[in-house]
Amino acid sequence: MNAFVKNEQPSSIQYEPLAGRTVVITRAQSQADEFVSDLERYGADVVVCPTIEIRELESYDRLDEAIDHLYGYDWLIFTSVNGVDYFFQRLKVSERQASDLDELKVCAIGEATAERLRELHVHVDVIPEEFKAEGVFTALESFVGGPEALKNLNVLIPRASVARDYLPKALEEAGARVDVVPAYLTSLPENLDRGRVAAMLSGGADCIAFTSSSTVRNLAQLFDTQDLSNALAGVVIACIGDVTATTAAGYGLRVDIQPQQFTIPSLARAIADYFSSVEN
Image (cartoon, rainbow, N blue to C red; front, side):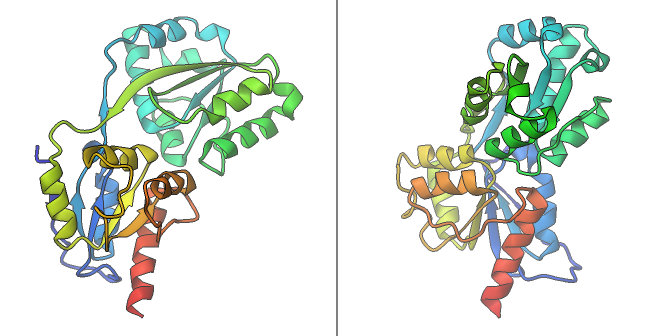
């Protein structure tokens, strides 16, 4: 598979503020289809340049142990669709069923994560309105009835091997016992070539969209720099949320586009609206 793939623009579009614009998306190749389709509806030429790859862990001992002791948890928090998928792969290996989660409270960050759980016949008790960790903590605190109710709760969070620590730390400070267990690995794709990416970015890219902090950090790693401003000079920067935007700013980027809702459709719409306003 090539490091980046250009997708053809559809032939019939009603609202196309991105016509003639090239938008680079850095999401994992396996998860790019929805974003590509959304942008193409607005007329964009889309280049998929994944700076992140989702991979299996070398060892699942910790996750398997947590699954074997599900009865010891009160809450299960899924931070992404990836976390759900890899958790359920190991649940199957352990010869367990979705029904084994019936006695637990389940929190899903994002509607896509909640929908994947529903497809797997898992009830979802909490879907925070705000997708970042601070909003998740607030939603959980409200659901259980205040900070005192968080004390002594046992919480399992299966997630990427590298992620923000705010949520588990906040829960622990409130008195909960939290097990953060790696379920999958994110890394820089092995076949991503710095020269080709640099040529693509300098050869007509109008906008680059980052959908997580990892996509920003990995691009900086590819260019071996702590300042991406030169590599992305003249390219409009779009970020899915303020955590990603903060990471981008830390690498010298000025974020031009950020949707109010931290979802892929909202990000695509924000990009379209931005270029529509530029044209007007």
